[in-house]
Length: 215
View 1: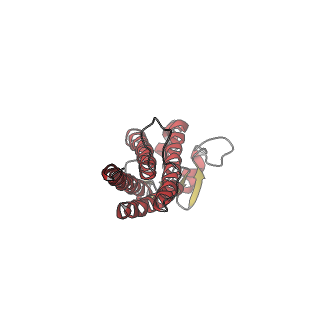
View 2: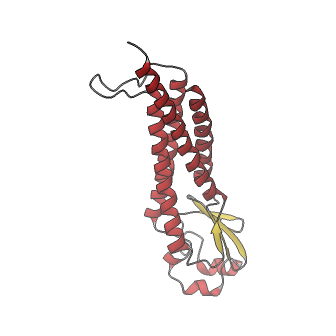
């Protein structure tokens, strides 16, 4: 049982670190605009060496990111001047907010699972059962549920980002691809999933031993 929990803790630590890195970095997608390298994350997008918040749409008054100014700097060619502002770099706010929220929830669930997993490893009496009539809720089971919840949240975040990027942003940029921050999100999904599997295996072993022990 302890070997499963040890493997689960390792996967959970790696998955949580990858979730934080993927959420915070600006390389979910990269593309070229008139030969200029650009990339974006959940919080900012970068054109050349300049980075801007996702809330700053190109052409927005007062943002300093007018289409003419960017075309003059060589970041955009003239064909971008005829496009509506919503079809340039900006994306719907709900799309960004949903992806960010699910990634943050995933990291929080994974962190909670790590705490529960450490309590399980240390044999602390917390989370032993919900109430006398309820089925026993062991510590490994609690940790496994949190890791599976983290997996679900990061899967939702990646599905939303993938769908909107392919259907919305991908059509706006000819030469584009997903980048390493996006890939780290999928690796984190696998790590949290395997952490949940390990802790569920530990739970099953714990239950088998409990049932086989004579009272």
